[in-house]
Length: 365
Image (cartoon, rainbow, N blue to C red; front, top):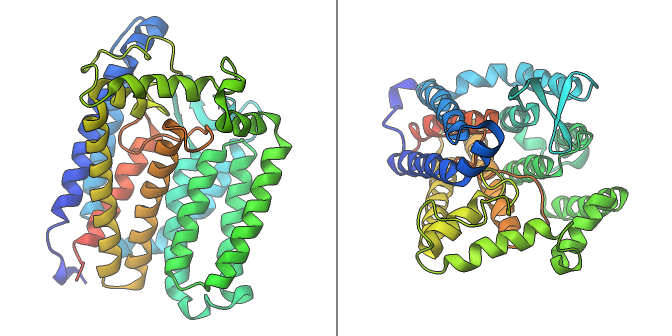
């Protein structure tokens, strides 16, 4: 296949680098006050973002220039390793609790989030499995059940942390790959009904999740508790109007809006850069997602097609959930905005995955 390699998709690179640059600027703007208060260094989060962005760009360059089918033979080992990490992170004293979830491995501020690795590992393995057994996908027991069991097992381990947001992204992107592989719509519909029932059960089983649902329906029922984040997010977005208050001029980042540099960074973008700034970010994501799915449609083989669809779906699902939460269209859950939010393993893994997507684009028909 190497003989047919061309330049990677230019618009995909452009949108990726533009979003990363916007993210670096906005992470500093959103976090400077909090960083100075917590660490005595207003550049704390900016320096971390630059380090992980650099690591991610190096990884992206490597995966962009390494033929994507090479990773096919490592997909099984990678998935097993990620399952092992998801088990290890649940061990008390080993896994680090942050934001109420035991999702991290590491010491202090240095750590990795195994669930982020699992998203890419699962998509890579599903692309291999479904490309090799595509003829069976219309059969529920032999074709659809095995990948569903893997996705369900990973989702279950992530929910034990608990991390509903990351679990939702994993399931959403995986189901889109399974759909693209040719699964029957009737099977997908039944699975959707079962998944909805399971989601209701998960929400009912945890009082804090139920509070998030009621806060989503009416945040003013508990403005200082479950509805606080949603209200403060809307307080940030509203004053932004068309052109915003100006870069660095956010009011909500002064300890009003929780996690302004991560989960709710889009609120700060809308407040400081207004509708035009927010729309620019959404247009860049739309461009990236369009080129990603176009790559999936024009990939030279089914493995590349499914892998491109899966990586693009991770971005798409994550953007939809994050923006939905920020503008009050979805219940609050901990999901970062790809390439924009402050992050360590999440940012590095996203750039690595996009490098894979760019490599597939080099062989697009």
